[in-house]
Image (cartoon, rainbow, N blue to C red; front, top):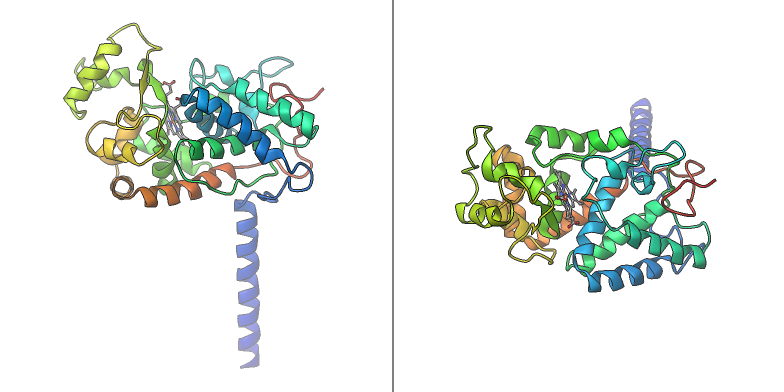
Length: 332
Ligand code: HEM
């Protein structure tokens, strides 16, 4: 009897330790929302004031900054590797296919960084600035809020090939897209909820042209798309030329963060192929698309959870990495 209860105690202890270890590592080690409470209490306010000024001038910037968080975290973790310019042995991720002529907002992050360097020199990392800006942008566009985990440090390198290989492309299959998520510890729920970011912002003609003219490779258009929508997109996105022409991704409420993205998918008005496959290639993801289309609240709750999870991908903490003085270059 006594040995049974000792065994039980040991089992509970082992289980509890394992759970603790798992949650520590899946929470990204020592990240915490209070990380700058003593070292730079003004940090949140400084980020917020720049972001809100810029977004009120140009609403699309909310989308552009939110996207940078994704493109940063999927390449060797949330370490601001995306922000490094080429030089001194670094080949910038900015030139990789998913980013080239597409990602934007780097000058806004520079402005935030300069303000933070004046207030609290070499204290707030560029990786944390991206995470805070992404949250502020989402809220400014009408989306959910969350406590941003902080304490990431900045990488001393970038990965051009990582940017090409780890960020999903709009014409990837459902399976390929899902595997880019599972590789970084995210799942189908995160995939569907985070894709809801396409409720704001723009895409270029080149990102979806093949859907209008050549989806099947036989020169035919994609008949799974609403034909009125196709006709509208074709007027600004011709068979050739106009690659950089811009289109809002959610034509119902283009600048508002809401669940219309999911309603669009269900009414065959998904802009990117990667949006449409969520409803056509897998039953679980289709169920989630339906759930979020039916409830803005369910979408918001999951989005907040999933973006915190994304922000925890392989952060550099402790003495790893550095706090860059300039987000575009490693410290000398
Ligand atoms: C499922 C995988 C995803 C794919 C294949 C994908 C692909 C794309 C593409 C092709 C564009 C248009 C880029 C252009 O034409 O210049 C875009 C825009 C955008 N994406 Fe995604 N994306 C994905 C997931 C995400 C996630 C997880 C987020 C955020 C957490 C996000 C946020 C955005 C935003 C906000 C825009 C608009 C940016 C702007 O207007 O500047 N995307 N995405």
